[in-house]
Image 1: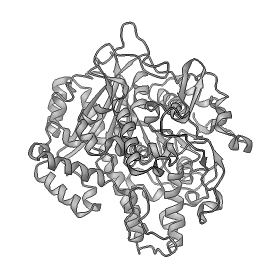
Image 2: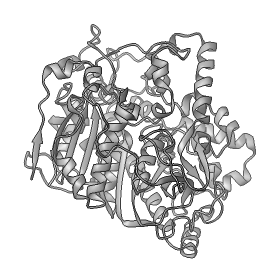
Image 3: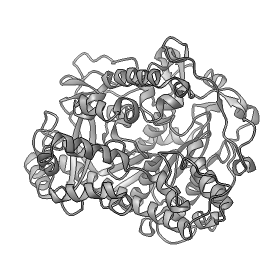
Image 4: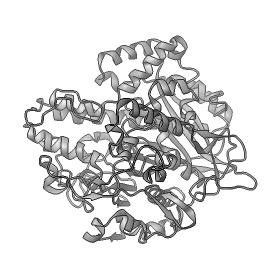
Length: 604
């Protein structure tokens, strides 16, 4: 076993991101987009053996349960909408769409935009607040440092509408109706985080597809931001519902991904609000509901069973898309997915990728809740060879028993992932810390509960430090992995930086320079670490500048968190899915990002 550890000096930890950026004068090998253009399509995976939403039928409120009865009475079964990216034929004299960090133009089809994720249903996107809340989850508030939050409601609404409309109309690097390239390509599945959607993955999926991968990303009904499942041409509920009923159904779907509010309800008897505590929640007077910690962990185990089941359904459906057209149509129709066998988004999905998908070489990646999903699915579903996780890992108690085997590691911890595991995490991930440390440790302990009931493994309760241990649960999961493993900690990045796709589309350098009308992005404050993480709020911490855009050589302005993510992803999957020795060598040698990363790896 080959081991490497890179110590990070205190001066490097505390230096500004700008000094780290200056160390890159050219893009590292492996971060340029590949030789394929990228095609994109939307499909539906349907399973007639499952209820429409078995997970939320157990946890949601009465209004949502009434909707489930209506949907199921119409004959609607489990339906998962997914986006599909694939290698496409480039133009005869190909040109990059926007420099080396973008794909080639396709030889056929129409260049896609974000409205395609809404099936060009602009009225639906606007009605549901997609331009501001769904398509831009937390993006503007996070990147704006609360600037818009301080504006009057009318100015805030106008700003959201302007930015949202700009992004919805912005061109992507993929092409609708593009002709698939010749070849047989490995498959990579992408799992979004809480309240996310398949739309968050477009730049990452385009990068992978340009290098010869078919990529499929579902939007989960259980917690996704906008699962447009009723846009399936064969949706029984859509066929019987009025436009008003359809709108109401989507609004309820949007409102029932409330995993964080469920935590507060189960732990303290008060439902939270979105990602925030209950309005009048006071940790000093709150009491843990007897058995609440256990019920919360059981809930998460049930959620992962549902998510992994949905990943398996999409995996099975996409594999069938690689069969000949007749076999594909017959098999999908037997599952209930007839719409995937006839025109959807102006294409036949059956036949589009005939012979192009290598169903024996499969990888999976995910962000946040999707990172946990990816790690569990890799161990539980047959045929997945390697996993990649961004900014999270499953705690021991949230892991369904059947998804990891018995046994102990050399350190005496319960074994974890037995498939090759790559973890990329940000050292300033306040969201994960708020949930695992602030909620399940500090708030539970203050309210008279036992944090060990949620996290019985001592390493998961270790106090977070900035670079050596920024996420105790993730570090513990990495230490419990029994196969090849890499942990890359990216400095000066938060929970969303490595995954959010809108940074690629939104002209953020202009925003930062004040060339757009929403103001300057202020410095951020580092999250509390060590014993401060469990104490009451104190004095503001040290300020830092978040890793973001930089001018790198001939590439021009690039978004560095995506460069880092793409470098690791390509090396990881090229080695474990394609057997590329050069990629293996890149994983085993010092990474090219200097003080921007701290890396620990064991790659045989």
